[in-house]
Amino acid sequence: MDQPDIGAYYDRFWSGADPAALAAHDYRAFQADLFAYVDQLLGPLAGRRVLEIGPGLGHDTLRLAQRGAEVWAIDLSQRSLEIVAARCAAAGVGDRVHLVRMNGERLGFPDASFDLTYVQNTLVHADWPRVVHECARVLRPGGRLVALELVRPRQNLRSAPLRLYFRHLVPILGGIVSGDFAAYRYLPRSAQSLTANDLARAVAEAGLEPEGWWELAGGMVSLHLAVRPKGLEPPPHHDG
Image (cartoon, rainbow, N blue to C red; front, side, top):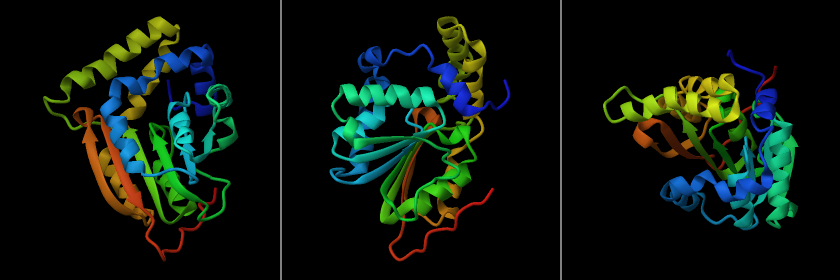
């Protein structure tokens, strides 16, 4: 399957998802140490304005709102937004979550309007330099970008088992369970389009100041932390 219409793709991908059942199957539980570290990097969130690009099933949206943030979560998938809305309402944080169908490459928010931009496993589906550029534009001086992305790992023995699992077993198992083999073939391929160095370069070119980046899970996941320097003018809007 070629690069799909991402909104339509995820509308179909999540079409059978039951919001009530998702709370019992938070994938973060399998990576508790990693996400505890990410939460630490995010720092205090009470009263802060957070932009989340690509909330998926809302696992992180919930966590951000439960920690007191005012969250704007954007996605091209209407089905994803419906699931996130249902989960946040059920958890009693719906009043702190604002859901908008929007393209992360062309954010409809003013310059310097957020304290934090958070992106997880979203950039591989987009023109990632443009998304990072837009994240930099909407950050307030001193605001942070946190990006946690699937990337193409280095070719080494440590990453070989994970590469085998993700590239070959995930499409088979996901296709059997969902009946949609094409959808699960696209996911591993999309992750091959981005490297940790690509993301680090995009962060620097957007005018953000890197605070650190790490390769995790045998190099298949890259975590980047950057800040918008105080006194730096936001980059101009990307047109077209």
